[in-house]
Length: 301
Image (cartoon, rainbow, N blue to C red):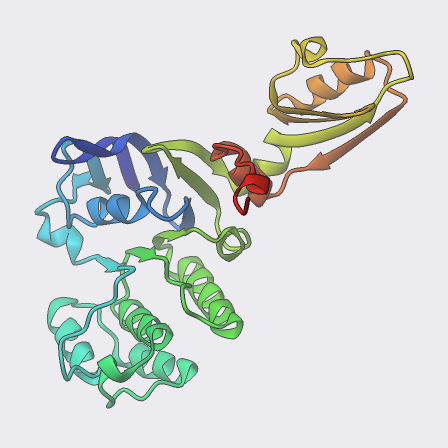
């Protein structure tokens, strides 16, 4: 198990991560979501033991990861900013990782190289950004890690390669019982492959949620009341509202949790029209990171 407990990471006086806590169970994929600059990379580098936490703990099977060579030998971190030394090829990198990871498999390396159609003899710095990501993922999977951290690993990939990676990581977790944390600012990349997701906003983890329960805990209701029955937000005080929008007689609300209780309370208000919708990950994301509403009409004046 990966456990992050009250993690704080600072750069001088600036706090990049503020008391984050979550866990990743064996045989599961944890999706880390947040806009660019939210702190995903800082979190993953701290989880990987590249950075030292200023406070809190990062535990891999109960052991602190920082300066822990034994646990790091079970871990592979694929960063957002892929870097290879000059004149490196996949074959040279495979030989390098084989010397560090005792479980490195040349058979897996060869099979995955063929899957992605990469030439292992060519200079990696001549590869495109997307090809470099594929190459590093091939090398990562060939080490057979128990803990795999992937930072924006879909960036720069075409749809076919994205799906191959999704299938590959999902199958690997199912087969090996590995722990995976994968970050992205693109919700569509993670929604169909993760068991659980966390949303970083404002230096904090504002959501930490099972994908299977998302439809139960985040719900949208759209309703209308009889003419003359003018409802306002105050009339919904007993309902745990996340958002209230009124457009004429049509009212739309979003609710966190207690959806059955919320629906009963709404029915008791006697709407002439009531419809219930599950919220998508994108809607949840936008609500949680909602900031300033800009008046775009004034920009081009």
